[in-house]
Amino acid sequence: TTARWRALDVRHHLSPFADYKSLKQDEGGSRIITQAEGIYLTDSEGHRLLDGMAGLWCVNVGYGRAELAEAAYRQMLELPYYNTFFKTATPPAVELSEKLAEIAPEGLNRAFFGSSGSESNDSVVRLVRRYWNLRGQPEKSHIVSRTYAYHGSTMASASLGGMVGMQEGFGLPLPGFHHVMPPYWFDFAEAGETPADFGRRAAKAVEDKILEIGPDKVGAFIGEPIQGAGGVIIPPETYWPEIQRICSQYDVLLVADEVICGFGRTGRWFASEAFGIAPDLMTLAKGITSGYVPLSAVLVSDKVGEVLESGEGEFAHGYTYSGHPVACAVALANIALIERDGLVEKVRHETGPYLAECLQSLSDHPLVGQVRSFGLLGAIELVEDKASRKHFEPLGRVGTLCRDHCFQNGLVMRAVRDGMVLSPPLIIETAEIDALVETARRCLDLTAKDLGIAL
Ligand code: PLP
Image 1 (spheres, helix red, strand yellow):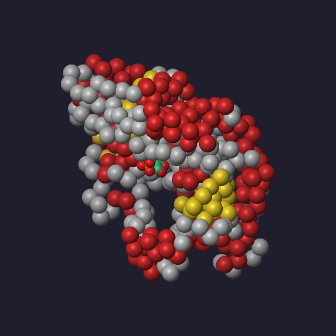
Image 2: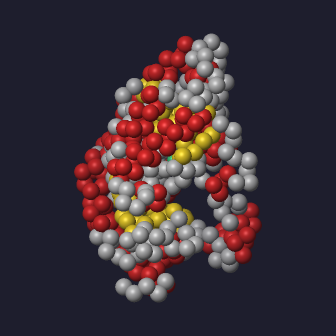
Image 3: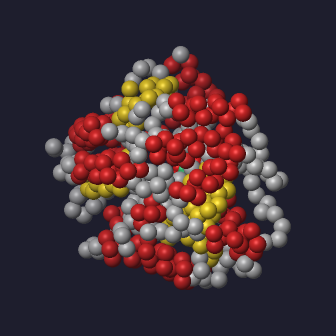
């Protein structure tokens, strides 16, 4: 069956973010994942892999949780689908709206649902425009975000994102989307610049951009508290307070994309709490259902919500699956599990600090230029020269080598450029973190060997 699945994959399946030509030519074909339990995946040939990425940064409560399957099953029998258009709602959609308001930072009391992070960020673009239209300032339609950002794959969310490869050749970014540098000290700091000074400079880039476009034209700034897919970019402490000040000074809505950072990943329910961010809008997906079924949400602050509720006419935007009852029921069960198992506290007080300590032990490795982590988000930067932070050329080759060694040695870690990134399920135990970091060191050694670097 493995051979058959691979053949079907090559012949009929266009997978996302894939190089189709090389997939066609690659005799081996894709790895077929067939089963998962806890933090481990099993492929169709029986290999066991420790999933250091929680799928795509989403399986927060781990695999095989019967409570989520049962919640879906019960809801499918009760009411498998009904829409939330045209003044209708369902119990799971409204119950989840209330639950999100309870766990979210203060004032985010309303939820608008979609099925993916991309949809939630697209909805943000609409909500921002609707908000400024109702405030009589329709020209405040421009949005500022950062390079290296990933906010999704639809045309608007890829415009918010700052991934050049997703934009070139696709007519993106769409008009009205602007980018500034990310708060990425390791790659962007000048010689001798401290993280604190760099954080202020990265925030000033946002202010300069707002002034360049004109504050009367800028409606929102969007950023992840920690940029995940961009390479787990943890901003210096000076960054977010400055961003908050700038947004309020120029009357620009502050949008936190918590698609990766939310639901306990950083040892808080939402990373905005950890960085002292008070967002006007917040986008959620992934960990909202631990990836078991597709669901996303935009949480809307009272400030924005009250304007939306004061305007004439309808907000002409929504999805067939907005507030899908099965997805919302699974989200409620997922949040209940996170609460019952104390996963947010476990990451904050136990596994987050433990991962930080274990990653630190890799700093002495000749390939490792920096390790960083926050809660259960981590990164290991691979460099040619530690002192000058010089990357290997071409960028990405060494990361890919290391990633492949990890795969072959039973560990899923992703490479972003030459940064190895980590985001394990929140149920991971300290002994499993030991195993993860031990395998990572072995794979760093194998990568160094490939490069002819003495250990
Ligand atoms: N925002 C962030 C920060 C993400 O990491 C992602 C996906 O990785 C998205 C948005 C898009 O989410 P989706 O793939 O569910 O559309």
